[in-house]
Amino acid sequence: MIPVQRLKDAERVVRLTMIVILLTAGVSKWFSDGGFFQYYSQLFQGDLRIVVPAGLVNFYLSCIPFIEVGLGLILISAQLKPLTVCAWFAFMLSLLVGHYILQEWSAVNQMLDYIFLGLLCLVLPHHGHWWFRDGES
Image (cartoon, rainbow, N blue to C red; front, top):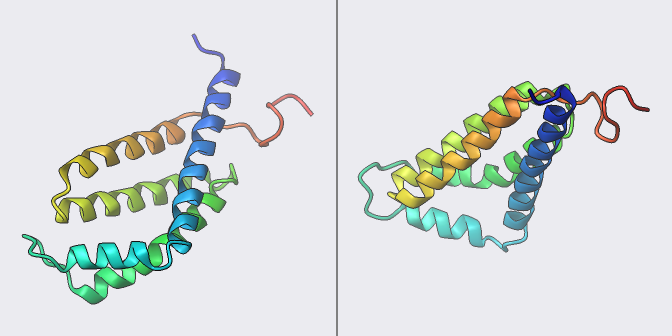
């Protein structure tokens, strides 16, 4: 049987990984000089089986960096973890649907790793503090 302290340590690593993924992705989009927005906006205007209005796509594309940075910062708080992980699932599912619409099948499959990362974070117990293990000060 794995000690609870070890499970809490593992959750800390998983949550830190999620935070780094989100902050890196969001900040890199801000500094892409509009490249992220232009690239995906153009892809969604192509000949696709599922057509989403350009205004809706462009609005969501412009929100993505803010969502990523916001979720990354909120995940720092262990108290808000359950709600934030649910938001992580919703966000990752929205990206999965976007890749599905674009018919990027390998990207759809790769999104499952992010879903499982969130699931792992959700089920593992967490320490009450980032810098100390429970029972230490």
